[in-house]
Length: 323
Image (cartoon, rainbow, N blue to C red; front, side, top):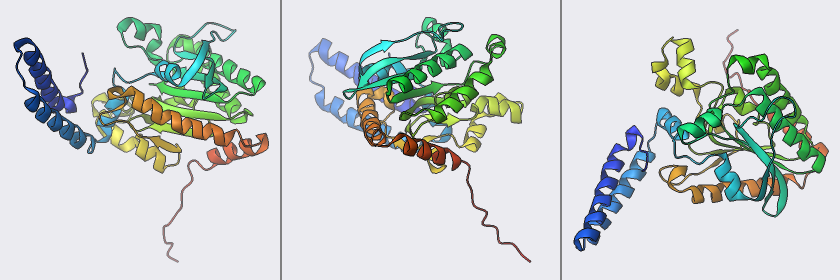
């Protein structure tokens, strides 16, 4: 059964009616094709109208949609011969991080991503996509392997944030994130980052340093979740929608700030309505990025990566000074 968000209720009502008419047509042997066709066109128009005017909070809801494709969905669709590797060789195997060797477009790659779960059991198993220190160290181990094997790296970012539990802090959560950022900035192989859902806080940054950063249309990228931001600023998580507007975390907004390089368009209604179309759009951008980056020598690759991140946060002061 499909999941509909609050603002999609008019679409839900129409699609339910269409479903009922189809069922009635089959059971009663009546031709209702014209009415079904009319309602289908109306539903498509309504979908286009609603999605052409989404606000920031609605886009955030879409980035968290329970039917949205996750990292393993993209890895299994985009790659061949995926062999998952486990563990950080230090403490444990963090199930919130998946990664290993694969073939993308005929080229060997290392893939790493944050994986959420759909059922309650899967969510607990994957820790809701929130990485612990051992998960970030596992990712770092895989990326270091990529450098040794001279393989490009593909990362898929989708996490509410790094896990804030006591055990994670005791095992060096902040240090693990910082080390990932430092090492990724120096890796001598191409890195393509794809933000596919929630790009939350340090959890996202631990996989977010790349030569090309792509972002799906209804994904988000933020230093903090709107709920946490509202709880800190106003001591009221209920003001999350207000915080969302101030944070500027949607794809269009972070693209304007040059945090991401390309926005990957999603089908009308979001990635969950047509995963194949979304995956194909993403595949084309990743392929183009990898082809371009693999032509660069190591010195140029690292210099461009350095310059890319040095430019983040730049601004101009256009205030006229009165003397």
